[in-house]
Length: 130
Image 1 (tube, rainbow, N blue to C red):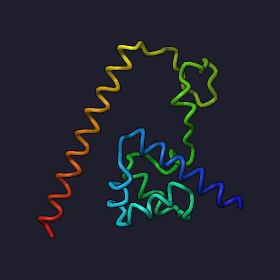
Image 2: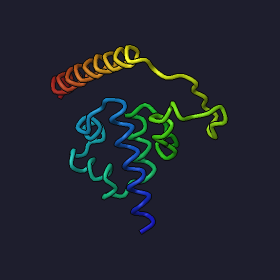
Image 3: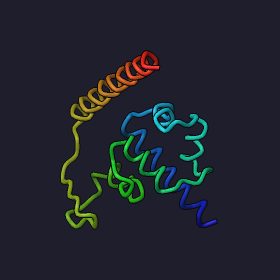
Image 4: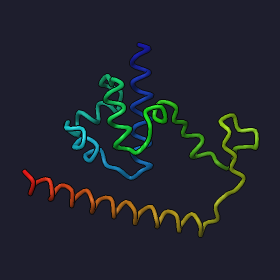
C-alpha cells in the first residue's frame, strides 16, 4: 500500500511538472519508447517506476530525478502566501499584475507552440532517417 502511494505521488509530480512545461504525454512516451497509455499509467501511479526510468523522464523534462521526487506545487501556486522565512530558502515578495500575468501566459503559449513545431520537425526527421 505504501508503494502505491509513492508511485501515485511520483506520478502526480511527473504530470504536474510535464503540464507546467507544456509537454504532451505523447511526446514523453515517444522519447521513452513506450505507448502513451503506458506513460499515462506511470503518471497515474498504476505502474511501478524504477530510478533508471525516473532519470530518463527527468532528462526529457529538463530537470533532475530529485526535483521530481521533491516537487511541491505549493511553491509554484502559492507564491503570494510565502513569507521571508520559507523553509526551502525561496523568497518571493511579489505578485503579478493582470498585465504581467497575461504577458507571461502569452509567452508560455508561444513557447509551447514552438516546442510543438520542433517536436513535429523531429518526428519528420526521424522518419527520413529510418
